[in-house]
Image (cartoon, rainbow, N blue to C red):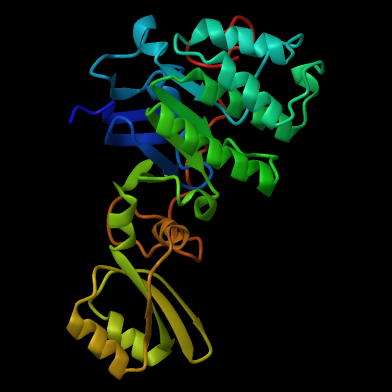
Amino acid sequence: MTAAIETRGLTRRYRGAAALEDVTLDIQPNVITGLLGRNGAGKTTLMSLITAQDRPSSGSVRVNGRDPFERAGVIEQMCFIRDNQRYPDDYRLRHAMRAAAICFPNWSSETAERLAELFRIPAKTEVKKFSRGQLSALGIVLGLASRAPITFFDEPYLGLDATARTVFYDELLRDYAEQPRTVILSTHLIDEMDRLLERVVILERGRVVTHAEVEDLRGAAFQLAGRATAVEDFVRGREVLTRRSIGGLATAVVAGRLGEEDRASAAAQGLELSHVSLQELVAAYGLGEPSGAGKAATPNGEGPAAAAEPEATAPASAPTARSAS
């Protein structure tokens, strides 16, 4: 299967510090992919490079086999909804929707109007006066109604309450079922979005820690708990992602799969084995014990500081095919 997005050795440096370093990825078409990582991990930078809103320091990007830079035919197939989406000062809801209709060839006015009503977005208020949640809802409306073959959402739920977030998740799945497309979601709310994601890319300090199907990732680690001495005996020689201890008890998240002998050994030592949620696994990769390149800092804060990921801003004047502003 031909990848919708390919990056090869993609690197972006700001003032000598790497926000993204040597990222090589193939993102498959018509799949919902989660882009996960802590603040400053490089998520927004990666999306900005793919959508040609920034240029790499080195490396390459291909979208459906073509370089997106200065190619309107490629760019108009992508919609990037930022967490800090900007709009002209005089814009109201109708202006944002009209601009998006110009930008995106597959724009669905019916979808936009239905979602705007569903999220109760005020029609007469200037967008610059919107609350944080209303801005997020507007971004969701524009992103879903764009029907762009490749759609990016950067932390799309900021300021939304739990009910509104659930509406977004349900509407995304509904729209995806009706009009399959490549969706890339940058998120911290991993437990909430767990049911949406088919694949995940985990970034740490600008590098890819892992890129895998969600189900494969869940099966690639396990958690055990029990007496600290028994836990230490069991994990000896294994790759420990995280460990915690309180008094004489300990828990550990361990990479690898368990065989029948492992389970029997754990039971004999009184250890409790359990599956690791996607949230726990991402946290483990983000705070795991370093054992090679690309590993994160240890829980005590040792290790190099992450390069600051600059705040990128979309053009605030004429709308472009790359951003719904």
